[in-house]
Image (cartoon, rainbow, N blue to C red; front, side):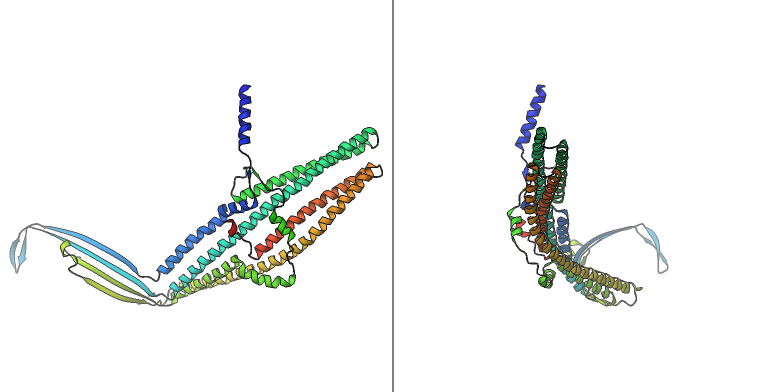
Length: 448
């Protein structure tokens, strides 16, 4: 028994010594920019692209190689009889040994390869810039997704508070109705009805807590953090959200065409696609180079010797030009050209689809944001009206002039009105951030 008590105290002290860690929205964004696997993959691709660019520059430079060789030869000749001018001659046995040394260098350079080298360099430069733009786009996406997931937590906590306040109110109402039933002013049926109402309110709290825990898990998973770790989050609207709610973002549809043009210039993912399309066109040039002649140049030098001491006493120099012209290669070049052209046309269709999608998303953001602005105004008025109606029905019931059912209906309307108001607020906040994201204006540098 004493051991159990000591163990419990140690566990209690360990829990007290490790308080919950706080995670605000700025910290969440910073973690996401550091740990997001998709962003890391894109950044790794930049290393590959830069290496390919370096290799593309190298295609214009001459190659240089050095070589050396050493050889040894020994011949043991046994004695024999040979014939010289028809006379038998005894040839004595002999032993001969020789060595040879050679050092040299050679260099080759491609002088013309049908413009393939130039097209390869252009493609590599476009790819590097496209990957850099893709990294910027991915960072904006990570910021937007993190903000959305964090807002889901804040919204869920706000809704949970509404449900918990409702439970307290229903508990208070049950105590009042039970006391009035004891005094004989209301029936037992009213008590049962209120008990059901309290049970329903408690059930809504359980559901709201479950939604909140799922929202927390979704954020931690996206951040690459263990979902079982316990964090505290901002439960109230921060200055960031309050500023957004106080900002009347213009939803003048006459500006939509202007904003679309700005978005096509600012959206780094779209600009990256345009550069990638240029790379596909470079692939066509590379494939077409198979029809053109190729010109290469070569230089060489070697120093042969039969002893190390005589090395570099003799010198051999050589230089040459080689031109090759393909005549027929079994339609392989034509096939490569056709394949490259089809790839370019297909990707061009994807770019056009992206342009239409950007326009559609901006239009949708405008419509949703305009509806969200109106929704906040309407739901805020509904909360005031539903609250006043609940007070009236509660007072009527307390005076014996109303029915409990009317009170329950009024309370449900009030809870729904508060829920709708919170949802409308966060819908507006999300849509304002979404508009920035669709315009390519979502900042991320401050979190790096």
